[in-house]
Image 1 (cartoon, rainbow, N blue to C red):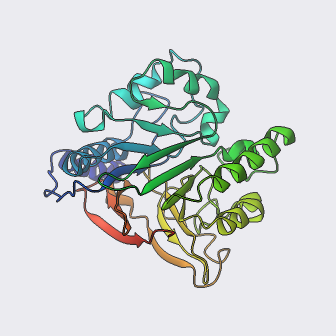
Image 2 (image 1 turned 90 degrees about the vertical axis):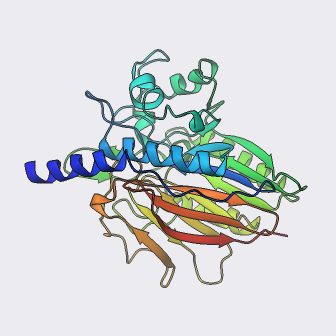
Length: 331
């Protein structure tokens, strides 16, 4: 264990001092960053080497591409969220880690299972204290216009814990969601999701984002209630992509004969190479999986133009691009 930790610390020190090659930008593009499961640790120093490396490389790329915002896909504070709006974790795990000037842009935040273990309402309330933390309610929408065009990108941010129930984790076993704690609240959100998707008919790109995966080959695997109820809505309304975290790696999954792209972006704090659910996704659907233990985490950055939306996975060690996929507009 000591040898492994020494290697991790060495790579961490290298990572935070490496500069990434300059990235060309297009003024007629919308650029943004995506990360998930980034929430540090509940003891000093309240962050991990992976989180610090990811923050460093995100800041370099965000500056190079002039990113407009960040999407944060839940598990914002391990292990049990925050206690109140003044919890020091907001400073120690978030503000003091993602402190670069290029990351002082809006963060569109949603909640993960670990956030619901604590006071998730306090995370919503932090929106009023922070200039960049945007978490107005458990589920909400954001819309952006691609510069120099009339094309738009719609984000539908959902709360998968309300929809499906929470997980029950301990050191021996992780029990998946067993159904919503409050069925009425879940049904209210299902109706809201469909209404929002109906209203995106004119948007070139629609991204639905939640914490639990629809499909995943990793430790937690697919989420049954999302496969049963969200997947049909994504297909019915021709959604471009579903972004999630929960599993601590990078994945791209696309079912045969489906236009919906599924991206797991959950390795901003720790990497888990588990592939225990590789047989629980549709045959031939896995396009990419990345979970190298010494990669110091991973995240995504995206460039959207009226012609295509390019999603790139990058690793935390040196900001190296490890995968790119171009998403086509709906129209």
